Length: 419
Image 1 (cartoon, rainbow, N blue to C red):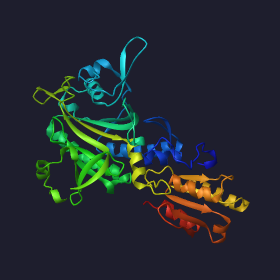
Image 2 (image 1 turned 135 degrees about the vertical axis):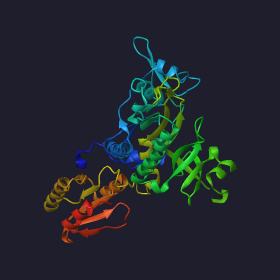
Image 3 (image 1 turned 135 degrees about the horizontal axis):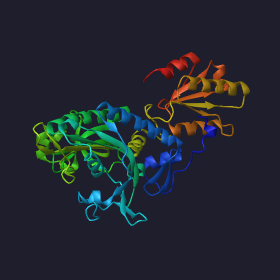
Image 4 (image 1 turned 90 degrees about the vertical axis):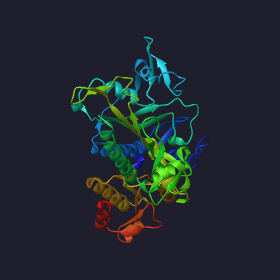
């Protein structure tokens, strides 16, 4: 993509009404646009990052047997009355409205009831199980207030998978696979080294649920981390009994602020029972389906990466989710330099190397460098009269303080290498 054709522009000043680092940097760099408190539009650069995250999650869900589908945003009142979660006194963040025919509907704030209601039509026998459907969709939560940028919004884009199993054994086997898939997701997204499997309240059907918490001062949760075991405990369940059950010593549990980037829950029959979601076993006996829930907010994950991997110059995207792999900067108006830059741009595209080409002629070199640091693409390549005189192109990683001059063969070899 040529930067001259990108309608977004970087901003020098932070938005006056934003206090979170993720929103400040993403707005300044032209990744998102704030529509109102807790509601953001994803601009071209932001959408590219979101799609990269979505692709990683999809691959990991498919690897453990997930089947992608798409549930509706508009939800039927009658469905949610079955689980007693339509009443505002039970769930206070519904966004509800009426259709022109008077039918009451709500906008999805979660998906348990929707999936149970759908799967009721397709599960009859033990041969139909297990099933692991999931989808990506926009979710709406009518929160009284919203803060922390895209870490906590009223409207957000998420992935939710629900497991439908015959019994606890089958459920637990998948649950362990989901744990590993989630670890892979956060590792591939570049924050695995800061993200901990965290024990939290399990509700009615298990002793614990599991959150994936990323260490950051922007987090709203407090967790206690045992780095030797690679696990953490949420403050809400932190006590001597829990420590003993997990084999953790109190002197080992460092206190940290963290943000929850994913969670998995055992649901038991909480949502299968209201829908009479049963199957017949090998003996013809009817049994309730055992369920589990596995969620990730894609925008929240994107915002968390910005919070923990940025510096005083801007964003530092991991290569796996960066909008482009290369930021190509043309400096000066010399025709030979322009032709060289255009040729390299085309060659990189031919090699399927994603490149953002800063071909703007009305921007100074200093402004281009500042924009490049703010946007945070992993590799910066500079073509100028000076670089060509020195033998090629100046290449620098976003995390490096200085670059080096290399020739075209070295450059292509570097960029085609899998990191």
